[in-house]
Image (cartoon, rainbow, N blue to C red):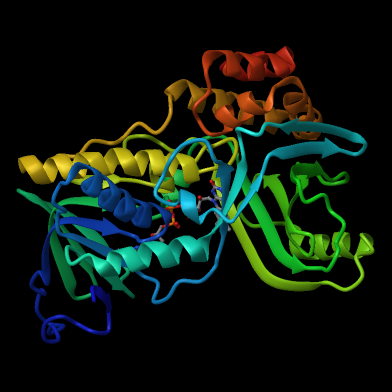
Length: 405
Ligand SMILES: Cc1cc2nc3c(=O)[nH]c(=O)nc-3n(C[C@H](O)[C@H](O)[C@H](O)COP(=O)(O)OP(=O)(O)OC[C@H]3O[C@@H](n4cnc5c(N)ncnc54)[C@H](O)[C@@H]3O)c2cc1C
């Protein structure tokens, strides 16, 4: 059993007047056991098994004391990753609409997939528990990381962990979030049980733009089966805090659908930064990973797929470091730089013309194919996909957004 709570020290209690001694020595400390930390754990296991490599000693530090079903990850299911068998729903058809205009795409080879967080958490935590080389410490909020001659020292309250290398998956700090253009993607979602709700279960509604708001607002609707659906109200707004109460907008919308009996069974909400993170965050033996390292796509808020790509690349480096003894890890490249540039231009244009968002998004999905959009959204477009996307958008506002004035 490798899972410990902060209130269960491994050695005797540390004196508060003394500088506490390191309590653990590891090859690697991973700060944060959210999506990135747990993805790293599962990629390490999978790649070590495939290559018959030995695992390094890894310590995961996480403030939570328990995990809940706090989010659902959706993405286009185009490439393998350790959680593929855990996907609970797939839609081969998706649409974007505004009033009576709808752009629809479908492709049997490109599913829009959904993976509930509790399923992934349960799977990854069970894997960590099975592996003697892995220790997960829950209830630990890291407060400092110091560089040492041969690695780094991580501290939390009176406890310290020495490692040859550290991967820091904590969310972006305030300084990072101050920079850059962009919006906040603020959303409020409900999972609803409603017998015979009548929404088309073969189609995911990615965006159904709602009129009458100062910034782009849309509904996101995933029919899970004939009796259940997930619905989210999303806004692209300049501030992190929502000025309006989207939960009540959502309730009002539900009431207007004349659904009859329905029951809300789960809620999820979030505020995702839609901006290009500053790049130079990693230093020496401490590597940033996850949303804090800019892995999330600025223009969409999608992160799951780039997280798998980044975690796989880091896990390969970790196994090589364990074999060679050279623990200088490098930041992985999760997507081409020109895609980040395209996103910045798109967000700049959108910021100047928020009222055009519905028209631009519907036009974009109408002028491209499902294969092109799924590759583009998943950060792996071919040149022709990127060209199709660029030429689907009106040139004037985007050319002006490229110019520095
Ligand atoms: C409700 C919601 C729905 C989302 N849906 C999607 C989606 O459908 N598709 C998609 O691609 N993306 C989605 N995202 C975006 C993104 O995929 C998630 O936010 C994802 O969890 C980010 O992964 P991460 O590892 O960077 O951060 P997290 O999963 O948040 O992990 C960071 C970890 O660091 C820990 N931590 C924080 N402070 C400290 C500290 N001081 N010491 C130690 N640990 C610390 C946190 O407790 C957390 O466990 C969603 C986000 C939210 C909030």
